[in-house]
Length: 582
Image (tube, rainbow, N blue to C red):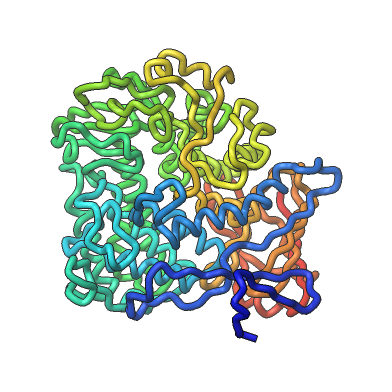
């Protein structure tokens, strides 16, 4: 009745029902911003999923664990997204531009929750520097707006471009491109120059054009790439070295933006981006695949002299293979089908441990003093996170690549390796750990980096424990949730279509999942053949749905069902969706 009884607890009496929920909200400060993109009230974001395993499946099988973990992935992702002072960054923490444009963006896309995603993107745009770049990180809360990084790695400028493209494809919201947003000004939000989001994008594209390896379309390294431990020790390398991973990201961002612009009727603005993307793909093939193996980094000492690092030709670091560049090249179809098969074999042979895919085939040499090429990688004393080589973020992208090429058994196993619930059933050498949170890394329990370098083969042989690393406050939880919903269960809403593309092993034939779609209850049944991917037929409430198929050079691509065809057939009380896979 809204009246307090002065007691330190609250009693709620509900009507009979199968489910009740309570939302507890706490405000750190009063609402400080009256910006036009203020976040509207939303329903709880945590996905409600239940799964009934296929007949004969063992209790506690991997599929049930994944669904059991999904709400915890969502909870961890929400900590990262809404309260950037995560449990292990209690003394402070902000939004990393790279991070917030991955985990939260992919989570919100997977949940089909687009108004908060629009809000997030406009907040990111409002933190763009007037020169067109973004800081490495910035503070979420308005009262701390002056606390932000003074520079950024070479990949940072691409992430807001890519995130905006993904939002446009999912929403069809062309109006966002004309929304007026300020550039960052340390004085106040009202002091900065205001411009349409499209003008923010144009300024970012000029930054991208100005940061190329001379004579090529390859993105220059700048202050670093995704791997924060590999910042260049020699400032000159910022302009003459490139990361194969950042080059792939540049292709992905420009190609995705071009596709998004076409989808909202801006073909004229898409065409130059398409030409740039194809030029990047050409230089990637020409310059970054010596001897048919993708390099991690290339140093251009002149017009024709190229040194390769993290490659079999690398005589400097001793590291021969780098997984992240290979994984993203597979994901973005930068490799031919034959090259993809060859790199899948390299990753399986040289870069895979019992806990998943590792960043390099061996640790970077530890000098403990003057840095030669890379900063933290050569001087950090702790053997964990990127230094320890098993960073779960990269492993999740590996899982995504396996789904893309259609390796259903391997994809499912990779997902289960990231799930901490009953982890020893999948990773026998895993040390005991909290089971309801996302771990950013799997850290081999070496005493120090000298022991790690000398005895690294113990990881593969299973003779050293693997600890759970940094937890909760990470973009990886949102990525893991999105992989569960969009790749494993295979359901993705876009502005004009429902994309259906599950990837699951044949042993899960008959699996049923109870969820909701557009606020209506939905039971999804999977009939899985030997391939474990490639939709044969889709039926909603017993009625076969027509669909078109996306291109995929490795297997049958995703089925696209017109959104209207789905919404017109959804009932209020009970719906069944039957998906038949090859």
